[in-house]
Image 1 (cartoon, rainbow, N blue to C red):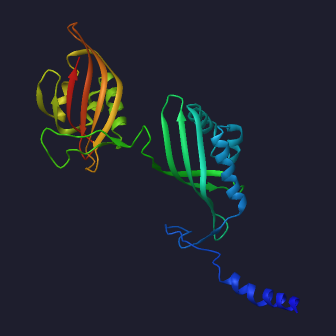
Image 2 (cartoon, rainbow, N blue to C red; image 1 turned 90 degrees about the horizontal axis):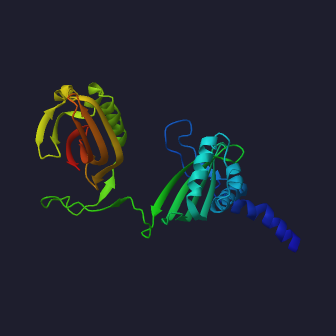
Image 3 (cartoon, rainbow, N blue to C red; image 1 turned 30 degrees about the vertical axis):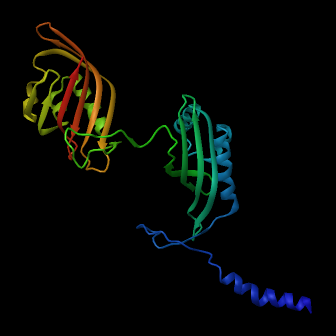
Length: 301
């Protein structure tokens, strides 16, 4: 009798339980051939591979770590970069606390979502504590072919994405706001500006400036100039040498994209009459919304 009840359970009840569980879910919404497709859970091996990767990473053991990545991703250049990064750390600890392996419903698109706590102690004394959410994309062999990372930064960190405070000459809506790094290519623009300046390439140099801009020199002069006024910039000089020491692109947090770059540098100028000029400079280059230099302020020693 008991056997009959068990057989009845297997034949009639178990299929009902299984059919009530979803085997796929979610949706891919971006345009393309995968649009509208769902996901299903991947196998345990996908989870185990990410846990193994995290362990090797925490041990800073590149011999164990690199095999978790595909050869296409883990090139010699990437290996060198990983080793260099890990070598800056006294210790690192990546502890996953949630791992979700997913596969496209066609079985082709493999990925693992992983949440983890990570602590990094650097040899220079810096410290980071992070909460990470990472997406690992896997190839057909289950190796990581790419990954993306999102992070929440703990307040105990020495490094933060914003800081300082803007005061202003007069009280305004921006007073009291912190600064953030700007990233509209200002550093690259200024690096090219330095290169063109040292080559005394007027046309290249002019390209970084707006049609009209303001120049405030170290000796207290303020000039409103047009881009075309730069044509005779190098006329008095036999040679120039501008050597940047540091560039810091910043903007006030929660404002438009206009930014300023603080540049610390040294400069030498040799005039055609034989006179020599040499100074350490601290300059602020202000970039407008079009990414052009709209004004600059210069201080000298």
